[in-house]
Length: 305
Image (cartoon, rainbow, N blue to C red; front, side, top):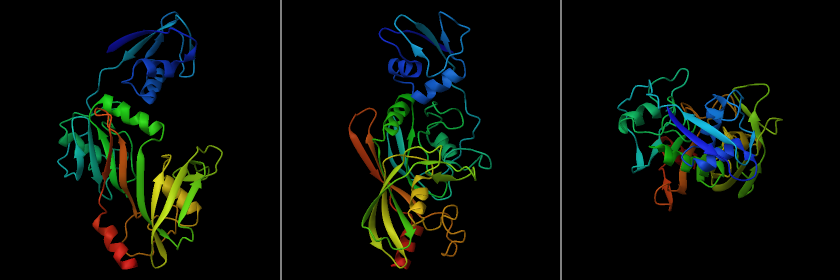
C-alpha cells in the first residue's frame, strides 16, 4: 500500500478537490472512492470518518492510503479488435454491435475488457477497479463505434477530466422514426433514473441531471430520418431518451421506442458513435478519430432510401 501525506496551505477547500488538485494522477471519482472506503485519514483525529464534502483548512494534514493494484480475475481473450488508433497511452477501437464493454451479470466473457486485456497484455489503467481496467467511458451493448481505452492511470485521469467538463467531441449517427421537420434541433432535458422502471432512464424527473443533445438532419428517408447527434453532456442512454422524448425514437430501440421493431431481424438500436475527439494526454494536441459505419447500418440506409 502506498501512503502519501498532504498538508493544506491556504483557505478552506473541499477535501476531494484538495486531494485531486495535489495528486493529479488520481481522478476525482477515485479520490471519492478512497474517502468512502476509509483510506483517507485525518492525522489530527484518526478516528474521524471523513466525507468528500468536508472542508480542510490551513495547516491541516491528511494521510492517503492507496491500495496496491489488484490483479483482475477476468480472463484475457483473443478477440479481434477493430483498432482506430493506438499508442503507449491510449487505444481507440470501433466497438462492434452486441459487444458489452465490461463484465457484468450475464456477461462474464466476450467483453471489450476481455479483449483488451489480451491485446494489451494486462497493461491498462486501474482507476475504475479490477472489473473495468482501462475503461474511462462506455457505450451501450447494441451501440457501435468509437471507444477510448486507457493504458495507464495518467491517461485515464487526463481523459476523465475532459469528460467531466464535457470538452470531448462525441458525434453519433442514428436512424430515427419519422421525418424530422427541422433541419437542426437542440434537446435540453434533464435525464435521470425512471421512478417507475429502474432499468430505464427518463426525462425531466426529480433526480435528473442536465443533459443536452444537438441534432442535425443528414438525410430524409422513407418514413425515417438519418441524423447526427452531438453530445454536450454524456448521460446514460442520452440520445435514445432525448430522441424518444422529441417524438423520434431511434429505430430498433424497443426500450424507448415501439416495442416491436418494424425492420425484420434488426437487433438493437441503429446508433453509431462515429466521431470522438479529445486532447491527447501526452502530446497535449487535439486528436480526432472516425469510426466507419458497420455493414448492417449502410445496408439499412440503402434499403430506406
